[in-house]
Image (cartoon, rainbow over the protein chains, first blue to last red):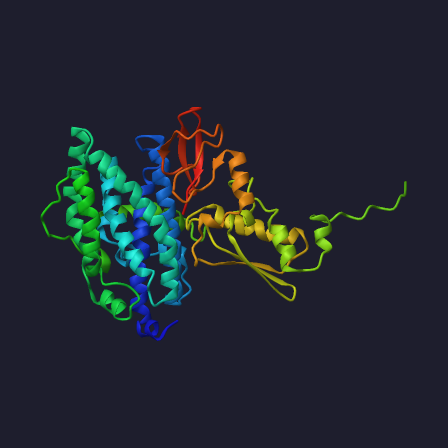
Length: 258
Length: 169
C-alpha cells in the first residue's frame, strides 16, 4: 500500500467500494431476471452470462469493501443483509427491465461508463483496486461490444425496433447524469488517486455513446436533467422489490448454504 | 497364491511416494481436468500460476478465468482433492487476480485438445480460424456467449455444424 492510499479514510473507501459493488450486484440481478424469458435462446444465454460476470465482479468489490470495513462482513453479508437505504448503486441499474431493447439500452449506457471507469481504475494507487479493475475490464469490454452491437442493430432495424430503442433511450436518459456527479466521497477518492472523479469520465463516455447512437440512427436527448440519490442511499421503490426477491432466502433462513 | 492381504494401492500410484517437489505438484495438477471442459487440464488452461512448497506445506496459486465463473470454486476443491488423494494433506489454494488471466496462457497441448474435442481454440484476431469439424473457413457468429462464460457460439457454413469457440481474452 502506498502512502496515498492511507490518506483515504477507511469509511470513505468502504462507501466508495460499496458503490462499485452495488452497481454490479443490482444490475446483475436485473439482468438475471431475463433467465428463461429472453426473445431467443442465444440472447437468454448471453444475458445470463453477463449477469454472471457482474456477480463475479460484485464478489471482488464487496469482498474488498468488507475487508476495508474490518467488521467481519464478507461479500455475502453485504449483499444479503443490508436494507435499501444502505445500498449505494446508481438509480440507472435498478430501473425495471422493460422490453428486451430497453434492457439492452440500459446495459449499453452502463457498459460504456463502466469501461471508461475500469480503464482509469487500472491506474489506482490502491493495488487491490487496480487488480480488480484489470480483471473486470476484460469482461466489461466484451459486454460493451455486445450491447453496442445490439443497440445499433435494433436502432437501425425495423420501424418498430427503432421506435422502441428511441423510447428506451428517452426514458433512461434522466438516469445518465448521476454517473458523472462528484460528491465528497468521490473527491476524497480522487485526491488520493485511488479513483477518477466521475465528472472526468464524461468526455470519453460521450464519445462512445454519440458514435453508437449515430450509427444506430437514434437521437440523443438534449436534456441535462438528472435523477439522483442512489449513491447516498435514496433509491426508487424498485430497489426494495429487487432486495425482497434477492435477499429472501438469507433473511428467512439465516446462514443457509447448499 | 499367498494369503497375505494385499497392501492398499494408494491413489496416484508411484507419485504418492515421490518426494515433495514443485515438479511433482505440477505433474499431479496436470491430471486434474477443467470441470466444464474435461479434455483440458488445469495446467493446460494456464490458470495455475505458481506452486510453492514450504516444508510439508503446499500453496497453489490460481488465477480465475472469468470473475463469475461457477467452476472456480469446483476447481479449488478439485485441486485440494487431488493433492489429498496423493497424500498431501497440508495444501492451500491462493487466488491471484493480477496479471489477469489471458487465453494466451493456454498451452499448445491444451489448444490441440480443445480442437480435438470440437472447440475452436482462441485466436489473436478474436475469431475462430477454422471449423473444428471440417476445417472450413466460411464461419458465422451465432452468439457472443455460449454454454460457459469462456465460449461463444459459431456456425460453419460449409458443413453447417454449430460449434463452440473459446473466446480470446
